[in-house]
Length: 351
Image 1 (cartoon, rainbow, N blue to C red):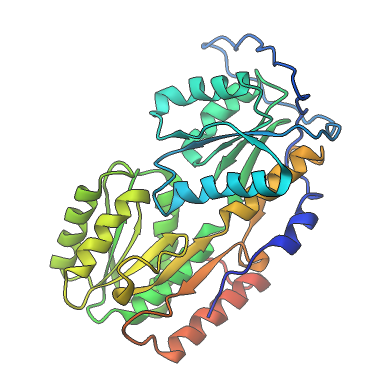
Image 2 (cartoon, helix red, strand yellow; image 1 turned 90 degrees about the horizontal axis):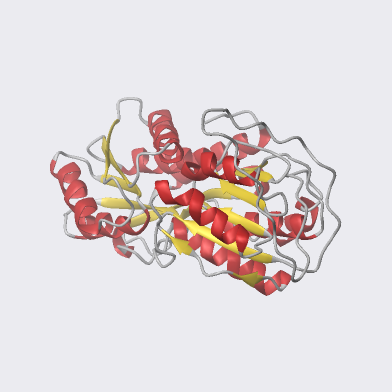
């Protein structure tokens, strides 16, 4: 059984890992925005810069795809900023919750103009905007969760979430009696689609004949739609559901509670307090610790343009069984999950 542990011991080591170079703001100095490149010309790639000198000033901005009270993805990022405040004494700008994608570039420019030292954009869908804006604000470090672009002041955090969802798929298939599983996503974006793909591979590793049906609500806030889609999956024979729909996941939990024989798996954080008697557990990403590590590296000027990746080997992702599940998860299934986790850490299993 995987139990996600704290990552404090890893944080000091992580701060020396190469991540993404950024000049840091002084306590009261404002940034001067440079002209944006012409829309008709492609933006030039940022070249790595020398690590910035350490500074005691740290102001953190946050952009999330949903409400920071969603008890899932967006809340994990908010908790990350609270951790940064508590441990590094950072000043926090008010979080920007659920902006339309067309507004994200403007939001980033506004936060940078507020002298934010580091801006966390909590979703791969923010990658393009961060790449564009980071070129104009060299004194701000832009950090995109699940992003791919890198630059002098552009750092993607790339948690190996697929390792966690692979384990979740194993659990779901091992517990299913019907051989039918269901997935409910929010926005249909790469990071969620990839997570669902690895879930299916994990499920088929346990039961090759299992089938997986997938739906998307189109956003992470529509609880009613998520419930309706979950009910349709259950009515079609699925008996284990997993969501990756932020706050809308509440609708999935509701549908499972109302269906005899249904079970559910939570997403991104320990959600064992949701649909508790029917909740098998949650796939987990330790977002706050990863964010703290990046913020510490930025504060100390120890970044140089590399992405930060972390997986089960680093105890950054995993699966947490729900101790209050009303049924019983067979010991042999738990052993298979533990073995898969160990193989991933050793590099002998790729989800």
